[in-house]
Length: 162
Image (cartoon, rainbow, N blue to C red; front, side, top):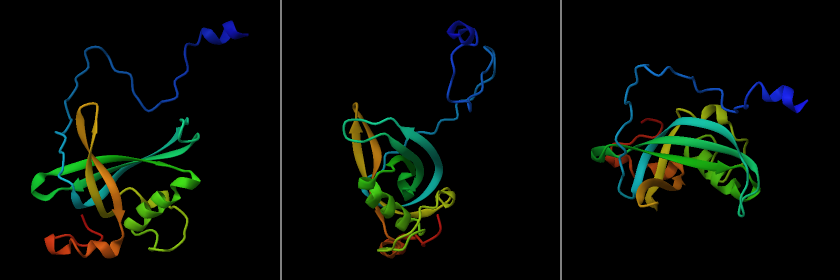
């Protein structure tokens, strides 16, 4: 029975990638990575993916949300950050902080995570820099509650806009 299935080749989980020809035209569409100074910034969620985390010594196998945000660095330019949310009991505080920041959950409140409203949502975050393999990256240190947004409003930020 095994030899029958081998003739079909190896299964690939990711079916979203398209195979291209050797002489196909390609475009370098990457943007220059902007490393922002640590501070408080407005952000907009630009992408959300559902994944399955296979586990580690510190984290059990669990659903994983990968969220990409564009960060308005003003004169520094537009930065970005990718955040991994692990759907475990111990990580509920981080998930709640994120949903409060984008206005889906009230500060101190309880509610269901509505992932359908994540892409396009805006909020404020506290940003830091992280070093990994001799490269520095933008890392969101904290998601800020909407009432904290008013501290930044004098710099041109208005809650709910980006």
